[in-house]
Image (cartoon, rainbow, N blue to C red; front, side, top):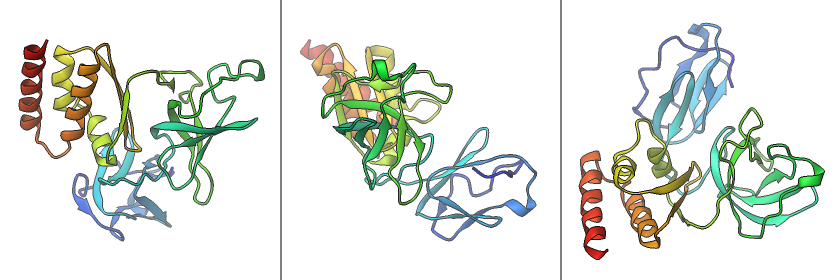
Length: 243
């Protein structure tokens, strides 16, 4: 987090950027606050790019570089899907597709105490929030929002999880809702949890619905909005014919 901000967004927003590009000059900015996401770093008053991608901005004050990649670099406040790989007395060890395993403290749950420590099997899928992400250290996770509430975080039961690029994850989380999710949501009943680390969970009453939605989401990354809607219409017609 940086304790200065611009009253207007950078002209580079939504434009391709490369490492070394300076996207914000804090010396010319008012005393406010901005948040820096992945792909950006601060050097004195200059905010520069550290990876190839597109500069993105979301209100009120967050900038990041979006790129489509398999490798995930943890960033504070990211919501991710993690797989439990081990448990210790104070932490669960969780794979979030990052450079190192993440720690999920056993008390990092709503109302967490030593008397009600959750129990997870190895391989359990969790929807979690990154709360610490310092270079050279294991990231730390929580199953709560910033106010300590569960807010949908925790164990994801049943369903199907697939891995994808981080770019597809961001597209599925975009606002307004991306066409493929919007079109399916008007006709089918299903749940999704999208992690910024390139993991997506889908659950529906029918296994066929789960498979159709999962495959469509995975195939939507390179399609335009119109193409996504056409694909969904075709898949829905096929579902009707097979039912």
